[in-house]
Amino acid sequence: MMKTILRIALPAVLIVTSLAGGETAAASAEPADTRLAQIDSFRIPDGEYRVRTKISQWVGDTLAETALFDVYVSGPDKSLVIARRYKTEGMRLLFVGENMWVLFRDTQRPIRITPVQRLLGEASNGDVARLGLNVDYEVAEESREDVGGVPCLKLLLAAVRKSSTYGRILLFVRASDLRPVKADLFLISGKHAKSAVYDEYRSTGGRTVLARMTIFDRIEPAKRTVFEYLDITPVALPDKYFNKNYLVHLQDPDK
Image (cartoon, rainbow, N blue to C red; front, side, top):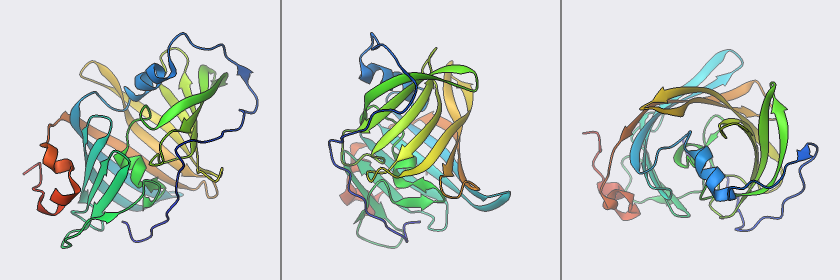
């Protein structure tokens, strides 16, 4: 999974360009971080939990690869990913604060990696391990634009941490409830690398949560990577599970 490593440093502060097109919206009465927290609520609940995630890589109508990961999240700043079905089964990714490591099975030392490095298809490490936006981004600009006839807010999100997966994100959310619709994902170089569509939602425990997301390659749109969030279960792991020095000793939380 981590055979190819592309390191791209993200600065803590970004200078972003103005949004092209669209009527500039009046400033919301809500603070930007409150809006991002509400947007995040469609992807992640508060607290500690496990998200079982299936990722499928497609090229046209051909299924190239499928993998299954368990993502254990503890608050906004810590996550542990265990590969259940993958070419490097048993691999572990740990994300704590602004640091990320990988430990392969039958190895003894975690390797430092970056969120932007490719994991599977169009999916990067950060796409899998970092589920929220509120900690890593801030709203730099906003306007309004309809998407498929639905009134949306068009939010330009700028990275505020060097560990953010993308330099900036152009995110479209429904104006009525801030539910994500689609996003354009940009590297720090300014390159429009990928686009994401939030395809499907479902009701779980009285909440509406994201069930399926598709990421498209901007250069080769026939290449797409589908995320299916199969299950969200409350799971509280001991703090030691989020310590890189414990990765080699870590026992499977599901056993």
